[in-house]
Image (cartoon, rainbow, N blue to C red; front, side):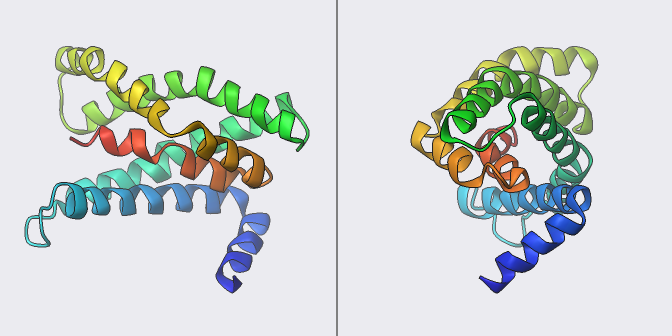
Length: 170
């Protein structure tokens, strides 16, 4: 609990920096988990560049975009009641998630060196599956995040999308 309190203090003192570093760290950790536990690459075959790319995406895109979105969402729907949290979740998943994935997937493609034509074809092929995968996460998990962590948007945003991000790596 002391680590959590220290994190909360850092978040209160430096919200933008902590948001960006949290997103980058979680995306890097997610890639490590994907390569080691899902793909079973082993340490010798671990693609360090891919992990660094995911960390960079977290710090340079995911953290700022999602952090900014949660600020807008908090202004649009002020309050911390359960109903407010459910409204935020519905807007997040119904409006923001499809747009976010539509931007994130081409960015990953560009960073992987795809041409504009190949990137467009990959987006058309992968977007529906990525969006459906985003919605696979059980509703009660999302509701829990928004109800319990609504006052901590960094944690909510970082935990609400790791499954859809990891699915783009394959």
